[in-house]
Length: 325
Image 1 (cartoon, helix red, strand yellow):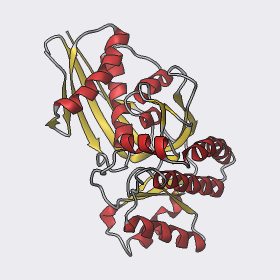
Image 2 (cartoon, helix red, strand yellow):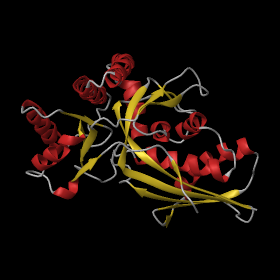
Image 3 (cartoon, one colour):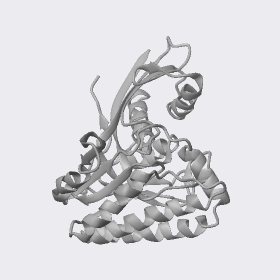
Image 4 (tube, helix red, strand yellow):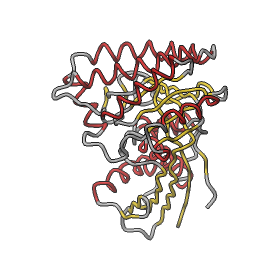
């Protein structure tokens, strides 16, 4: 017996951050978060279950992965095998159109695409809300990549009510300009950075509580189409998250000199009347939330300092897409 599924999922950029787990096994976050799915980065994944396979195989960008990487994928496949009551092994082929482990949300699109492909291949065929819960158990931020536009990941109270929900399609002159400061894998992984920050930073609890308030304020700003308010909340929340990392022991600093330069340029652009606001995840790359109609002006200014290939303009992205085989 052979059963197949293939899907594409897009990366999301957190505006109100997820940084820290209260439950490592089920990947339950310390606070709710809110993101924008983007159309520039995505992952395509095919899953083939077959009785003829002796073990699971995982190919990433055409290369067979080692036992460690494959083991994580196998554990994720087990979620669907258990739910669908199947014991077939699988071949997973995933292509990342995102730099891996560089703070550009490759794990979000990766596990969202894997979850969607598994959902088809296992014939489990759960709805999007439950699919979000499955994706969350691969990578927390993957829960949000199930949907397009603005998305909230509700922290919930347990593993059955922590999932993402769509907030708004973001089709009201919303865009983002991404400056790739460094696309290499980061030295401190998000998983390690979260654990260290939660366990050692004296600032963490304050940030986590404020993030819950920020989600509510950001959703209201989106409802009212108040772009400036949304931008200010986004910028503040990101800076507060990085402040908690600086308070960790030992401190964590993902910024590079060029990261700071981009932040400075964003503030200068804003002083000139262009509505743009920066945010950063666990990596040196800077994401600039802006009006899509002003994105080219922002890109032109950045090109005075950065090569064009390091500047990516993106609009809102869609939710997961099931692909024909």
